Amino acid sequence: MKKWAIRLIPIVFYVLLAVFLVLYLRTIDFERILEIDFDWRWIAVASVIAMFSRYWFVYIWLVILTSLGASKFENIPELSYVYAKSWLGRYIPGTAPWILGKIYFASQKGLSKSKLAVSSFLEGGLQVIVLLVVGLVMVLVDARTSLIDPALKWTMAAVAVAGIVALIPPIFNRIAALGYRIIRKKQLSPDDLPRWSTVGRGAGLYLIGSLLSGLSMFFVAKAVWPELPWETLLYVVGAANLASAASMVAIFVPSGIGVREAILVALLSVVMPTEFAFVAAIVLRLWSILIDLLFFAVASVHTRIHNRRNPPQVTADVAP
Image 1 (cartoon, rainbow, N blue to C red):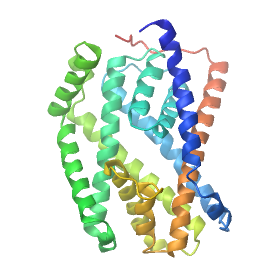
Image 2 (image 1 turned 90 degrees about the horizontal axis):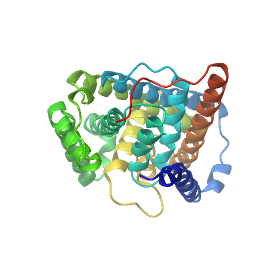
Image 3 (image 1 turned 180 degrees about the vertical axis):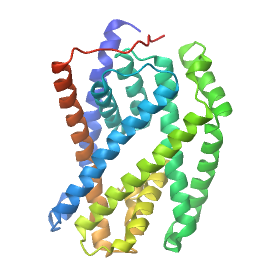
Image 4 (image 1 turned 120 degrees about the vertical axis):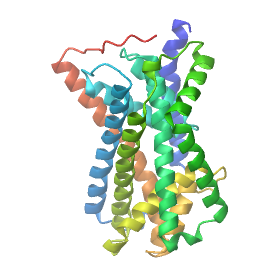
């Protein structure tokens, strides 16, 4: 790729991000939000948990990279900033900007492109499958989820089974090697491919991450409706994961509201008044954007402070 095209990649990324963030924000009903008298203490608690979960995902990424043989990381703040910047790419339609963003921005810091490609696709697959499995468990153990369309349940189950099979190391490694050969016209080294321990540990860490994300959702809902009973905590955590999982496999968007929000309204209405459930879903959408932007800002400032105090270093990996 020519140098001028390479320089354009970050610019295009930020322009697309700005455009789709604005479009996303325009779907939020701010008037509904202003009508609610929030308990800001619970918003603060939710925000702390959400920020911790973002850095937990950074930790998982580095664990997977390390298990693939990447060098020890000297500048963790800079890689956290790379992750936070790429994380915002989720607002650009499709999962490619998020995955490709990590590969591009991290490779500029000296990390192997092959290890970044494998780790990023494995990470994305684990996130989706863990959410699906947690969501399906929620469907099986709690009768209150019976209002979810059976067709959606079966679709989630089919995707979960297919995803689990695809993540089995011998199968995943063949798929990864084939994809890398088609895209990069190069062969992947066996050292770049995950083992059973890599997949198992990653799945366990993402299970913790899914519970943290669901817990933060519970406190957002409690901020909207403080009377939300504590005994509904596990139900709301499961509902949040189920809604996120459904949004990843559904191919439709109901009447101007996101799939995740629609599922959340339906499930939360079982344990809180419907009008508050609707506002909670709207607040969650806006709050998630603000947390992601805060994650980006904190990671950026931390990187600047770290690099000012310590000369920037790169890892020993050489991008093939």
